[in-house]
Length: 402
Image (cartoon, rainbow, N blue to C red; front, side, top):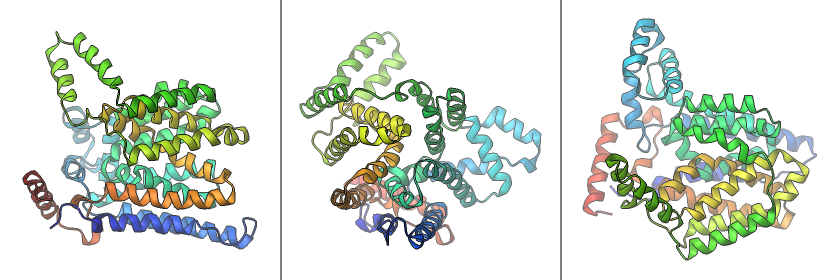
């Protein structure tokens, strides 16, 4: 069986296309039938996502560790002593996720029920975000953009991180209202699901104000030059850090290993670079038009700027780019529909076509391996069979059977 194939990514692409093509306007925006139709489409798409993502079988790789983990998690029915002993001596993850898992285990010991509850939790906060920033018509664009920009991976393969991400997404409304206590509370809660959410706490102070466009343009120009010339900005910084920690063996070895790994490589001119170049041009062009009408979008534009500038200035250390990208890419779920809404009719058509192409390309790239082969939980391969399949694929990959 092929390790990589377009066929593996096809179900993911089809779901994306169904959502995006349902966004195509029908009638006028003021037509009552049109509004009702978009409400129907919105809820049908939500059901589609619940079925496709929530009721998935053993897909990608993280399920291997989470199935074993969920087997060990106690339920509340087993008694307070068992739960207390587990949390004191055996807990594996952050306390918030552990308590969440215990509640899920109390509802059902079936791992697939655990999966769907996880997705419903995330989907709830995603829908609250859509409701706050968009009407039902643009909800479809939002959901399609969500799938384009790492949505599948976040919901299928990093279910702890996803809680911190969607809680952060929800909390951004409190940046606009300057409700720092509410913002911090929600993101501390996110840290209790995954510690990576700690980066969201100080970011409040960076994203609450609008920055000068000319300064941003200069930063982008310098960043693009450094990226294209592959000037090792992060390498230079890290080498100095390595020198500082040379007396501390463990940290020193860790840093050296990172510097010698595949993560420490600049990708140079690539599809990802062109995509981010287009995004940077769009955000610089439309930011003022959008925030002058609705300043709730200021934090999202700032997050996009942070994400893109880190990509340009830290390109020689891909691990940093990927980790930060995962945490901040949710800003694009909001910004892309907001930009589309401000475009002229002709530009909307071009941008719509571009988003279809971009979504298909990114989803294919992320779901073309055998681990992504889609199954629904009712008709999924057994846990052992899927593990054997992944082991065989890993062995074949090591031999070069591609």
